Image 1: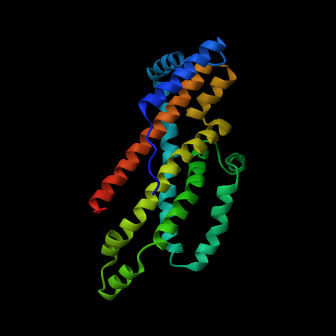
Image 2 (image 1 turned 90 degrees about the vertical axis):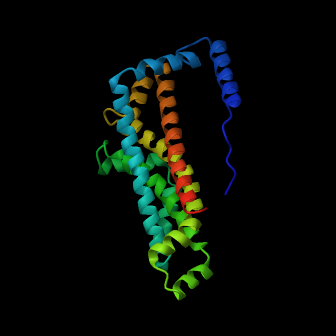
Amino acid sequence: MARRNPIRPWAVAVWLLVWQVASMALGQELLLPSPLAALRRLGELALTEPFWRAVGWSAARILGGFLLACLAGTALAALASRRRWMRELLAPLAAAVKATPVASFIILALVWMNSRQLPLFIAFLMVFPTIYLNMLEGIAQTDGKLLEMAQVFRVPLSRRLGGIYLPQVLPYFRSAASVALGLCWKAGVAAEVIGLPAGSIGERLYTAKVYFQTADLFAWTAVVVAVSAGFERLFLALLEHLAGKAGM
């Protein structure tokens, strides 16, 4: 696995300073509000009930799509690892989803479903190939000798899953989930901005753009970044706990 690249407070402070200097040099709050202006507006929004409803509405659908993609990707990878015809069948689908622009899927999906279902579907679609392909690779790398030994000694499936497959595939799943979590928020919010489901973060972003509420635009963007990063940390911490219990 690749080494993590931690975000240092001093680096964040430098970029905030650059933002502040750029805002002061431009001298146009309408074009580039200062960090303090964006933070102040975020604080004002956070005191309102519609703000939390929008965050909850978007998080439920986007993260729901992510979790569904994790389940589907893992299950199909397990089946495809045992059936060559299924691997060959799913290969073009995974490649097409990875290569096609998310905007194309969003526009096509709006023909088939209403805007309220769109964020969940798009988040699922963007996450699925990453989870599926990484899990398929993890299963393929499982030690064949251990599997043969487990078969000879007739080790129950539940113990094979926990003792052989889980330690092998968990690093692949952890890596895929880290990438997919950021991807699902980008794709899900993009779907909301285009589909404009009522009460979503995407709708608030679009409204801020239409009415030139630049501080609101930065504030809502900060919300997306914070929620995405927070859920990623929580989810990966749960995986680390699972890995610890598995003795990895």
